[in-house]
Amino acid sequence: MTATREPKASLPPRREFLLFLITGGLAALVNVISRVGFSQLLLFELAVLLAYGVGMLTAYVLFRKFVFLQSRTSVRHSFAAFALVNLFAVLQTWLVSVGLRNWLLPLLGIVLLRDLIAHGIGVAVPLLSSYFGHKYISFRQRP
Image 1 (cartoon, rainbow, N blue to C red):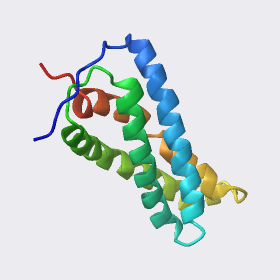
Image 2 (cartoon, helix red, strand yellow; image 1 turned 45 degrees about the vertical axis):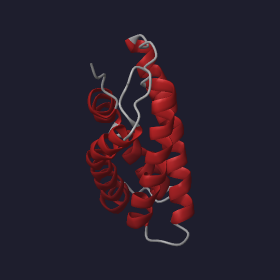
Image 3 (cartoon, rainbow, N blue to C red; image 1 turned 60 degrees about the vertical axis):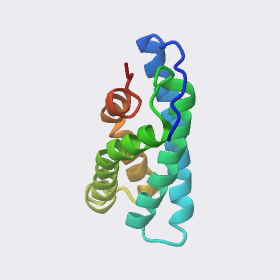
Image 4 (cartoon, rainbow, N blue to C red; image 1 turned 135 degrees about the horizontal axis):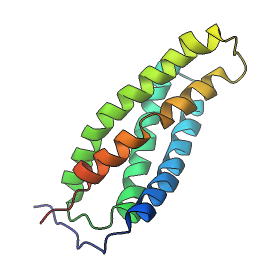
């Protein structure tokens, strides 16, 4: 049996979104830094996927602790839903990162920091879909 937690008071919507941006930004930074490390050993495309997993775990812990306070959902259920929402987000991140790195940035003549630029933009793309997915699916309020 998985215990549910006692909910805390909901944050005002603007504050909740601001905290989502701050904690999500921290998780995105962890994602990008870990990708740089993974890229030392792996192809960019695989490094992006592995780094996404590291960033996703970081985001889950931060969102549950600081953003979606009203959720009564168990860790098991909320993490499963979180992973499901992130399947859509990782697809967006990977397609944008790889597309920018391999197609658009070379077409624009951008060589310097190409991997970092492509991955940074790719990580930022699913911002809104992730917020609403986590608010209404991963950490939804249960009666």
